[in-house]
Image 1: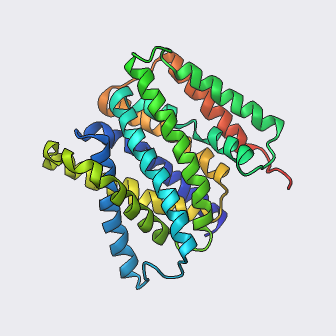
Image 2: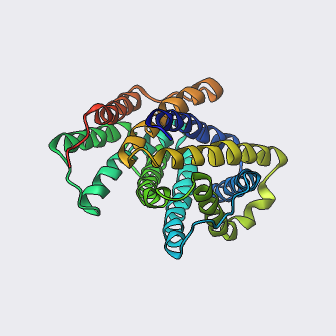
Length: 286
């Protein structure tokens, strides 16, 4: 994949990620069932795609690959579950703006865990993202539903940052669809034991939305993300994915008349502006 195609793939993934919050609003069941269901439909769609190409599901994989994929899948499962809780509690705008904090977590993890050098400008960007997040926070009262929703969204952003960093290791030598299939399979296996008791609350319409979520916003977007990560680094991918709130807020306004406050919009603009600035800077010299 060329650099240009990788950028195009990550932008399409961002649009599909933006639709995720919309489906979370439409589906009237608990977060764990949504997570288990979307992963299951993604597994089915990816299986059909991989087998139609004549490739094996374990082709080229080693024991170490399974360990990495399992760790990434755990982060992905927590990310999805916490994000849908954030949507249910705080609404689409709050959930996606809180999630947009994840590039800041990538920078922090690269500095604290991977011991990569962080420049002074990157610390400024991190401070701007933090300031923007404070503006997005409706209040600091954890009896406020929007504040609770934002806290879940930030947890979702942190686990997605961890997923992105772990996934870079798996994506380097394995086909993107294969990585996505195993990760979604692991997510489904992890989540179904906690989701079975919610099946009685679901309707046929819920499963229609979950199927669309699983095929397009999970299988296709996951494949595009993993493909892009074979070319782009985690920070570059994070910059584009951070545009998800723009798409999600626009969709929520059009479909549900959900409008964020002026303060939340200002905070979101600061966060997205800081992340975009980070992407426009020349890469660090090694």
